[in-house]
Image (cartoon, rainbow, N blue to C red; front, side, top):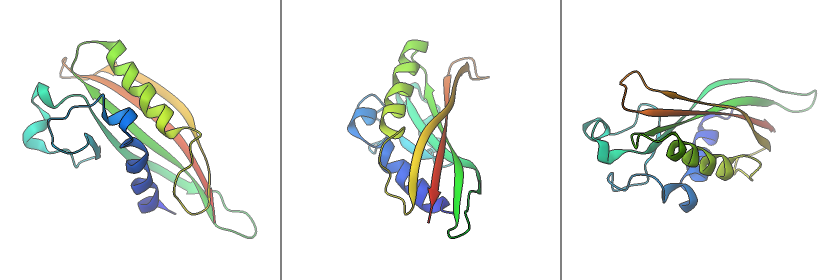
Amino acid sequence: MRTAEILQACYSQLTDASVTSILSASYGVPAVFQVGRVPRNDAGDAQYFPYITFSIPSDVDYSDKRALGGTAIVQVDVWDRSGSAVACGLIMRAALLATVRQEWNVTGFITCEREGTDMKMDPDGLTQHGLIRLRFMYLD
């Protein structure tokens, strides 16, 4: 289980200029946050969109006879209030290009592949929600 390392590496991958340049600059820091860590005073104001959150909802055993390993699902959420599915899709693409089949700084890293993507309107009726699921594999 390498949850902490994967989270740190995910932040590094997503804070690449190719991604952050199309996110909100209103936070004063890259608008890439671990789930539950978005500054709440600001997150509801439209000027603080778009931003990205990320988490690891699943990490299961992927060991062999000689080494411990795992296959984790890394979830990347894109939150956009531009009113354009195209804008949300462009951010999702930038996040995918920064993460999928790229080298991650995690011990035993094997690969990071796209498992799936979805886009939907958030229940607030204002926010486009892009959901990216990445399969991250490692073996120590």
